[in-house]
Length: 100
View 1 (cartoon, rainbow, N blue to C red):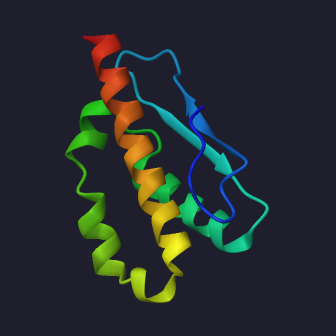
View 2: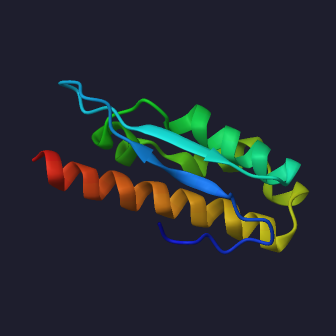
């Protein structure tokens, strides 16, 4: 699992793939830091139990901009959030190739 560059990176972050015809992926993550735990929860709400195609079509950056989180996060936390997003997109792209 690739580490996430954030001051308080999630201590657990990854996917499980339930056996289903839709190949929905389940995002799992946690952190000891309360703010990071909340950011992980946000990623769970946006992405968990979606297919790789659904994840890749989701404009999460627009969702995050609409929430206006960047002004409330330190640069390190914002970097960690977008690193999580990039990791999720990479995992979805990899899962899509495996199911094709």
